[in-house]
Image (cartoon, rainbow, N blue to C red; front, top):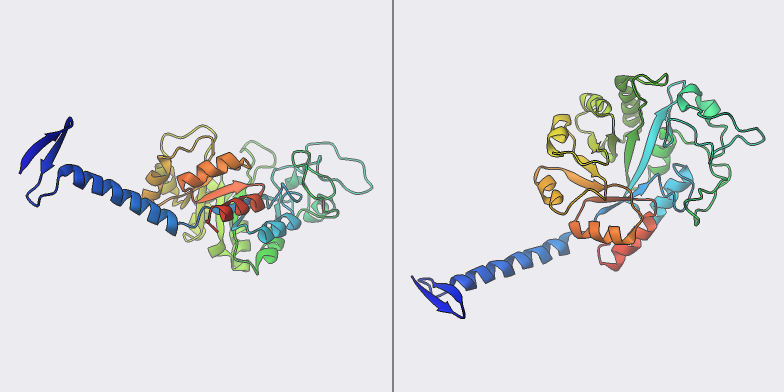
Length: 309
């Protein structure tokens, strides 16, 4: 073995006649080829319809979920809260959104109107499809749409291949509408089991106690940790402690180096909700596992244009 200096670079001549530079160059080519091969095999991130497809239809309604499915969404994201009579209904907040929902022919009730203080029959009186969300000028109203039960959503997606990403909405412990996490989890698990949806759901929550209770009831159900906007020092430890399979990270926080590290730890990475096409491109470049968006149809079209659908 001998060294050869040429144009300021030091080359190592190996016994087989190859230079160290050639071998390093070969490794670069090999890595590049592998990257291209991995990209070719990768089919892009899952398209997760946030609250169904609220850029196009009233949020968290059956119409929104059906629209998202028709647009090609892989996963439907939704939120569940409990009524006074312990029914799971699909609503983003603990309160009825009185800017979007109203009882036909009646004056608006005083806010806040907690779902937990209403029976299912009372919740079903609200029309949540007639008013357009001003944040989404292209949203098509669907007059008469009601707040659905979780069971009604299960029925609506039964013939599809889409999964459901279900967030449990929990009040603070001191709140008069607080629900014990174990009680919430048992009701949710029961609904999932009756519908035969255990393999098609991902349960997410900011209240990790709910996730822990679900894990006790059925360790096979996938769990997703929701992190606050401020990045945690370590995503892996809390996920492993809960047996979580997924991690949702705000798209403003997630960095390219996070993805391979979390993949190596056995976690799938979903981004927080964004409808920004430039952000979509950045997240696709990171090869995240899923992107939450109010516009699943738009994201599907972008992925098609990139050959990823």
